[in-house]
Length: 231
Image 1 (cartoon, helix red, strand yellow):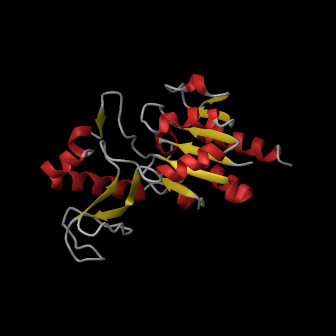
Image 2 (tube, helix red, strand yellow; image 1 turned 135 degrees about the horizontal axis):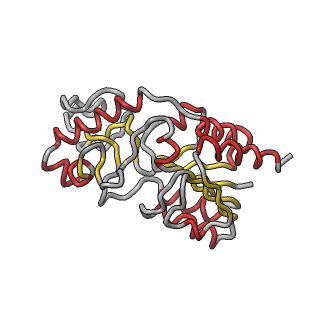
């Protein structure tokens, strides 16, 4: 069964990853306009670099949880029939064992060179303006899709949504587009749609099936039931 799974902040929050925005519209004490726009980087690059350096360090201190591990088990069984699309910029899916992962909002453990466009893997800080491994220019920025920028992999994601038979969204708010619109695309293509979330999202009404609760409880249970149904 061709399956597309979308994950958001809710799945990584249970590992201790701080969520993108809290109810006050702040991101770890910063207004998102100060750290998550191209204009913010142009205005105060050091502030932005230090902010993401801290996030990069924090993500290295946490571990994948049972929900991440369940999705890796699901991929091990479904193989190429499963595509995992994540809005998260951490590497917890990969550390859990998932391999077919598209990071539509970029990755904390990558940098992007503003001179040559290369996107090298990057685990160190960027605030000290290190040189790009490819061209040598000290013009690396976090490889994060900020507000006003186009998400990665949209064409590949769109093709997968048109072809899938099952679409599941896990730990997403349904607030950020284009990801919030994926359920409508999949449903229009005839897929069965499932939401697994701590609470109702902005698009819960569009799903055929809804499971409410912590991802570490709902996702393993759902994945086990899905695999049992294949037997």
